[in-house]
Image 1: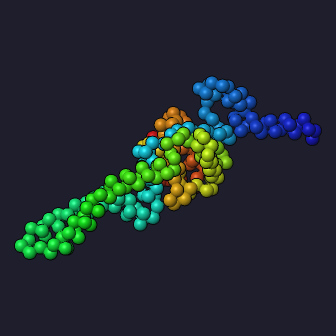
Image 2: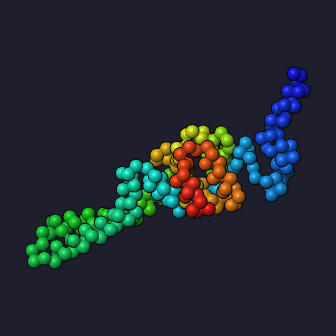
Image 3: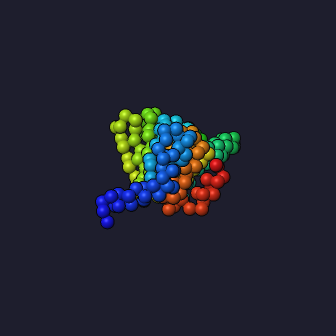
Amino acid sequence: MSALDRLHGLMREDFAEYGGGEAFLKWLRTDPEDAGPRKWGTTMEIRYTLTIPEFKEGYGMMWRQASFRHRINYWYFTWLGLVMGLWILLMALVLFGTPHPNQPFVLLLVVFGLAAVSTPWRYRGLIRRNYRLQNLNTELSVSANSEGITVKRANKDAVSHYGWTAIERFVQSKNLFILFPGRLQFIPVPKRAMPPEQQQEFRALLEAHIPAAGPRNRAASAAVS
């Protein structure tokens, strides 16, 4: 086989990847509406600046997707601690109204009750502190293709690349796609950064390359799409 025949064979394979020569020429057009959806062989780039509410949503999803102990901690810091604290303070008030209250014990109940009641506000402070420590108020760029996903800052001071096998699972909420490289690691990608068509393409890319994105995640995707 001559070199020209081998070149023709390679061109036929490349065209086949895009659905034929006509589809390949259509893909080359500069107008994104005429070009149609991008193929997974190309790179999808998403740019956004993560907000504190979005980071809080992703942070909560990370805790709820982790172990049972982490879910208990999440429930405690978001609402259970408040309920327990109010109950302890009510108990302290009842004991204080008795004829001979044990004042040190009542005082101890008040201290524990106030500490528990303050957990939702302390949780919000933790979210804001982590948001600042990770410098998330700068523009982020997420690039995804058939090989994996790359997250970098616009100022290029940090770049992280993950092959698809390094992503354990993903979930999506009303506002976010959330990827989990580890049990206590997450990559939040806001849906607002993508038009609806690109959201569908990104979800299909995740479902095609992340084995853990099984029926449960597909059902969730159908519920929020």
